[in-house]
Amino acid sequence: MRTQSASGEVVLDADLLLAGDNADALARLPAGQFDMIYMDPPFNTGRAQARRTMSAIADPAGDRVGFGGRRYRSSLLRTLSFDDGFADYLAFLEPRLVRARQLLAPHGTLYFHIDYREAHYCKLLLDELFGRDAFLNELIWAYDYGAKPRRRWPAKHDTILVYVRTPGAHHFDADAVDREPYMAPGLVSAEKARRGKRPTDVWFHTIVPTNGGEKTGYPTQKPEGVLRRMVAASSRPGGWCLDPFAGSGTLGAVCRQLGRRFVLVDCNPAAIEVIRGRLADSPGAGRGAGEIRTDPPRRRRSTYR
Image (cartoon, rainbow, N blue to C red; front, top):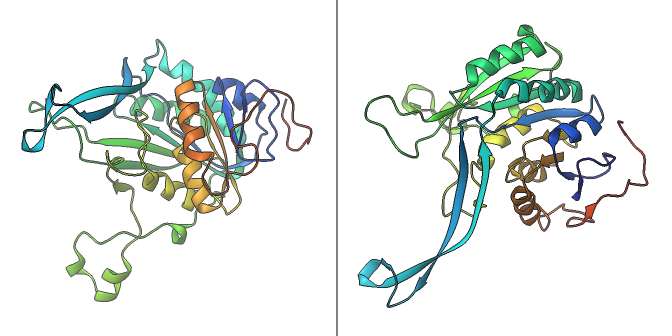
């Protein structure tokens, strides 16, 4: 993986991490090259998103009491955060979505991840930009975590809107997606129960476990299992995938596992730090994983100006 400025010349000759404004990066990427684009923009909640990483150290005079009366003191290791509010959210998204459509290959697919506050507005915008006939699916990712209010139904899902570049000509490999257990295995044959079923448009999947090896500590990190379905179904081996709001770099981690190429973009220095730590030493990282390049690359392939 090569790390470079998003405002420099971009050449698709290696997996890329682009540091800077994704509007700059999208303008410099070559059109028609990406099998799949995953966009997980800030959800416009109007508040800062933050995740703090704490360390507990045994200390007889500590401020916390644990099992068996043992005392500990807590130490804040770091805080990762970003602002999640825009005066005009759709105006922020529109030019990025227009360019995303141009970047998709004729068989390419966009997965646009949003929450219930903005999903209906974004659906209308996507219909206008891609065309209603390019709408493929509304995916619901359902999870069960966090506070549960008592005066309304708890909001425990995200929406993923799926659009294709060319209606009817998109790549979709249902057999490449891992099967899941039947909810009522007794209602199907033993053979079907053993094989499991293809996922539907409602995905029940836990968030990233707080004590799991996948966890990076980045706020709003998405689980690899959710993105694995998208990458497996909508990209080909060796194909290019793009995430303009890369965050913790989950798309890159999944692409490495499935043998795809990737471009990740983020303007948050904390995100760049997390991604480099997560991907630089993983299998397939390649040469120059930790180096930030600001000079133009010598090899000139698929260059867009």
